[in-house]
Image (cartoon, rainbow, N blue to C red; front, side, top):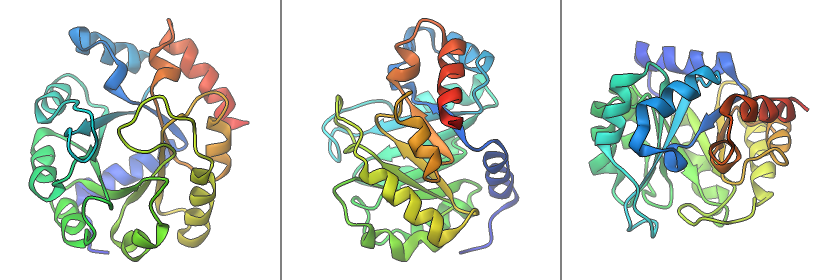
Length: 233
């Protein structure tokens, strides 16, 4: 792995210091009141926001891009974790650095030889990692884990709503933790709720992305309290 910049070192140290932690996925937030949503999440004790970027090509849905990341950077000091579900991370990932991302993951399915981009992102001051879908063989990611600050294990196929949590994510988290130890940050995304969150942390997850389990609740503080309680069980 290349030597990290001081900003990357600080980001990784911060995330290690709060793990395990819940990362709200802003896809379900009220974008008409984005700053208010951020303030409510800050009050609920969130340390990092998860931003799902979808291009309508790599996945069938469209979400948002650099302007939303830049807007969030202006209104909060929370860490911004950007998950690129896009077909051309080489072109667009550096633009998310400029927009204010602190962590960026992109998919091994989109870029089979990711080392150069991982090194580039880290040199620009952003923690960088790879994401992998449940249907993709882990052997595609394994050669590049040494270039990663984090690995994002998907527990649903990227870009498709309404999917059930795939337990293959648990075995993958456990395997990665066993092989690579505590230094590697492990993230899980998809179907994380009060039923599954404890299983994820028990198998090594550090960063747990939550969507409807938080944003479909009337009170974010109460929802976070319930999730944290289950996360520790």
